[in-house]
Length: 94
Image (cartoon, rainbow, N blue to C red; front, top):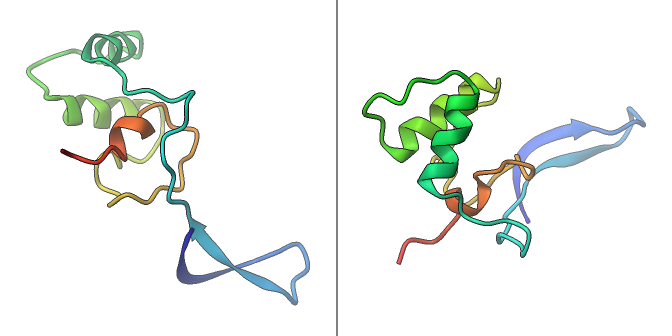
């Protein structure tokens, strides 16, 4: 786990602990979503599929869900461990 310099207060206001970025390897329950699955998710959110590449489409989905559009921008570190795009986002390019 990598830490950044920002401190976060715990319940006890006299103690602080570092705010952590989590380096996560996709687990057995996470999988890379197919483009068809991503398009279906976008359609269910009312997003029009107009000449967007995969990254742009995922950013649109993230925005529509009220999340930060951070897909493929985190350099292998992520605070959003419940994201359905995590396996693809953190995947190492070969």
